[in-house]
Image (cartoon, rainbow, N blue to C red; front, side, top):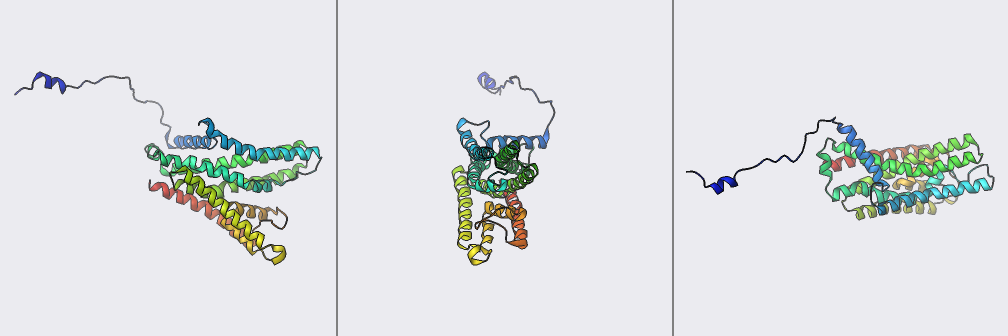
Length: 299
């Protein structure tokens, strides 16, 4: 039994050539894709390649950490001082709140948005693995923090040399400052990215990161202020700095290089304290990185 003509025409398909061609170029592979993701994430941390309002906060924070350095250099040159009025590492510690604002606002940009818009599976459908994704995002946030803190150090150093200040002293102390910048970029950032990856809501991520950094720093400062070593003769309160990533780094750097002065000086209590603070800093970074890997293995 044959089908009617109208049925036969309905079942007939036509293949149209719309111009698609196969790709015959080089396959750049996982390493290139990971580097591209790292570069894109680093640019996104400063709002580059995004809307104008996305650039406002990162550039404002960059200005807030750099302009005071220019003022310090100008004052030192005008007053013909032989040294800068601030230590390189100490300058970073005074900016911890501003740097925390940058970290709390930009870490969710790199991680929470991908979860909210469900683009993470698209990344994993490409050659990169979950480990590659975590490495690129973690490295981008660390480098963004490092660039933010290295900028004022560079301003202070160049200004000191142009002002005729001692080359050896400033070179040595700017290296201390760079070590502090690396630690500030690693320890607080590692905790922040884990918090940001825990929620697809950017607002929740910002509030959680800022809340943890601010509350832990306030508790540490209160403990040191109450148990003043000049009256109690004990450094017991300095151990409270272990709960705050920013205070931990400040205490570790001050004890390691003999920096800081005054009754409110943060420092690791002695040789044992130095070892414990260093181990806790390493544990924070390594533990946070492993938690991040575990988080994305479940996606």
